[in-house]
Image (tube, rainbow, N blue to C red; front, side, top):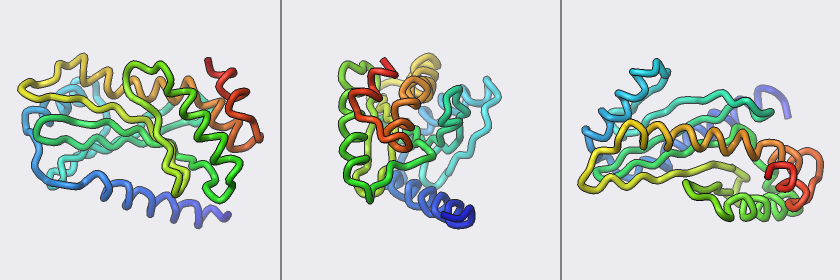
Length: 179
């Protein structure tokens, strides 16, 4: 695949990924301000879509995945953090998809905060944390953890993800390298 095709695919995925998170436009200004305060206090670079209530930013990783992009839609009584891997599993390869699905299940088993998700339609891998804020504003620590944990999980499981995608590893062998 040429670099132009890769860039075009990435832009299309970004546009469609953002639309997928925009199911309504009502959101809590108090939650937004708490999240914005966390970002501003720590000098994060981010964008916020006022019309949709979605924060967007990227985080560099310490692993071979290098970085993930984040989408953080805010609702009236919650917010959800999605960290999306920049590389998709090959959805046209049934063996890779089978191994990746098993790997995701193995990785998710026992996780206490959030979970990995695999979109079987296009091979997208993401980590999701949902924060219920009914009748409360999340603390700075809750906001921080909801943003930091997905990056930490991608750092921890990156080698296994890449081994399945590019080295033909089994899910069992890949997870063993990570845990």
